[in-house]
Amino acid sequence: MKDKMDKHFTGIAADCYPCVIEQARSTARLAALTNAQTERVIAVARAELEKSKTTPLLVQHIVRRVADVIIQELGESPDFDIYAQVKEKSNAISLAYVEKFQKKIADSESPFETGLQIAAAGNIIDFGAKKHGSINLEQELQSFGKVPFDRYDIEPFKKALEDASTLLYLCDNSGEIVFDTLFIQELQREYPHIQIVATLRDKPIINDATLEDAKAVGLDRLVRTISSGSVYPGTILPETSAEFQKLFNSADVILSKGQGNFETLLPLADKRLFFLLRIKCEYMAALSNVKKDNLVLMQAAAEARQGRQ
Image (tube, rainbow, N blue to C red; front, top):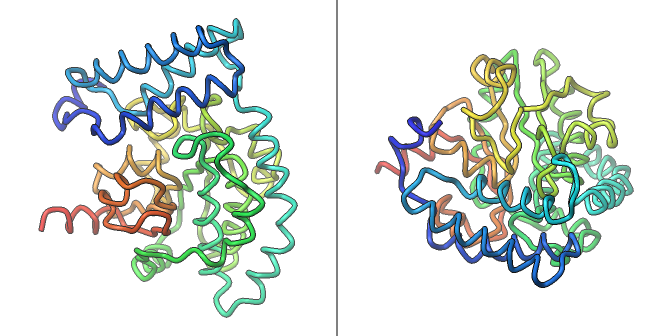
């Protein structure tokens, strides 16, 4: 992986440093670490950020390293889920809104695009970009329909789907996958010829969804679900499983949910890739040329072309 990253190595943006430290502190607090333990965790995060200035590291690598240190401080097994209760609550609250959003989709003039908007708006359930306790999930769910798209590559997306036989759907967070499930149902209605595979994280990291979460919300009963092999809050392609890489390389269309996947896959500039997310910070707003807190449906290759102009 190092050789592949060295070619385009630019280091972690300075704008990301405060967020990495705050995310580490928030996770340590959630894990109920002592002040001394928390300071050890923060020291590791700072050391990794310093290391990233000369070594090809991504934010996602540091988040994984911090999580592992917290788990060690707790004396738990490597697969311990720090956010287990948060994820369970997110799934439960989101499931309680399923009928409401099913009706909203069914009653709309364009069920497909309404389902797409709901799936995108659901990306607010992100404790990597938002610290634990800062999101009022029920309040956010009430305002889903009011969140606008500031970048909407819907026509290229529809055209790609019309010509596709396979779609790889890269899931992001727990809770959010409930709304992915609603949108996948619309994908199946609108494009019944497409075979859909949904992918999830290989082991718990922040509140990202795993195969267990997919089972909890019934996503596994709708489409084939697999682990991507990723232990990071994103998709670092060389560090995913052989099965996932084969699916990724052969898929006609890839729909990538969330900020972590966006950050790690955008450099590929692959026209098969479409990113669906909510912009949650000023750095990502500048990167995507989209206003903070708005929604994005973005074709990767189109963004790469704009960036070269």
